[in-house]
Image (spheres, rainbow, N blue to C red):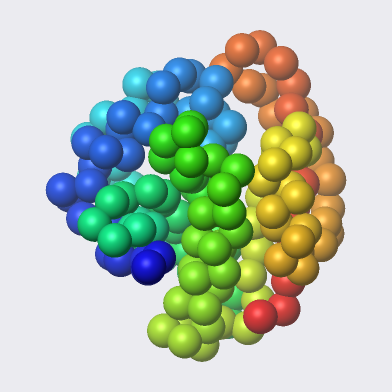
Length: 160
């Protein structure tokens, strides 16, 4: 059974292990965290009042991480969406985690709108979000990636 649970300090090392490179770190977190990811950065970020950090668990196994960021009383942004182990990506965990996070935002915080940002070339994530009803509201280029490339971001949203 899949469930979302509150992210705790005990989960930090697991999350750090899931981020293997500077490019992956940038794809996952934008410019929020420097690579290599470390306990100090995560602990400071988790103190942000607007951030609700969650882990997706399958039984006792931690399989994913997602954040809800409060933009307003009724709007929450899904951030730093990650299925940890590469071997289990593409198996539907991401879609289920996003569904559960939206349900959490709606029930716990009375959210009415969900937003997210995804890099345009992250095709798997885009398909996941689009399959859940997210639509692109805006496209913005000019994001510098860790590997020197320029990436384009898509800003997506949906009424929940």
